[in-house]
Image (cartoon, rainbow, N blue to C red; front, side):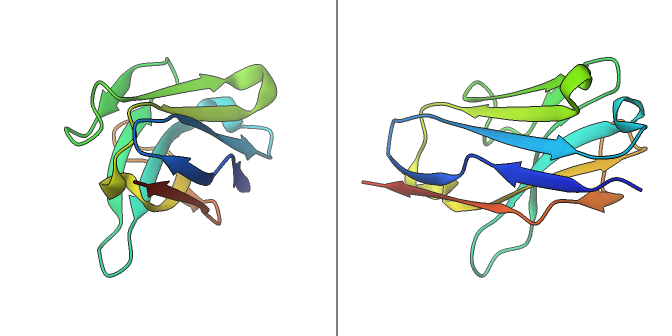
Length: 118
């Protein structure tokens, strides 16, 4: 069992940056792939990026070149560095963990709100 807690969300102006963190509990954090997803009001949850156990990364086209995922297994933490934020990045951001190296969805955090203003 893995419990995930996100932090770092908030209000930022368009063009700005935020870094989200997700701390996981449990002995086997490093054995899971980790991912970030988001959900805006009235839309389905959207996959953004994944980092495998080995550190291989993949990104959705909507965030490629602007967002960077990383992990620190010693701290049981995965990060999402978000740069050049746009109004359409406004959403609740969720981290997730799982066995799939490309789409980990076995465990979810509670989400953190990111609001981008003009």
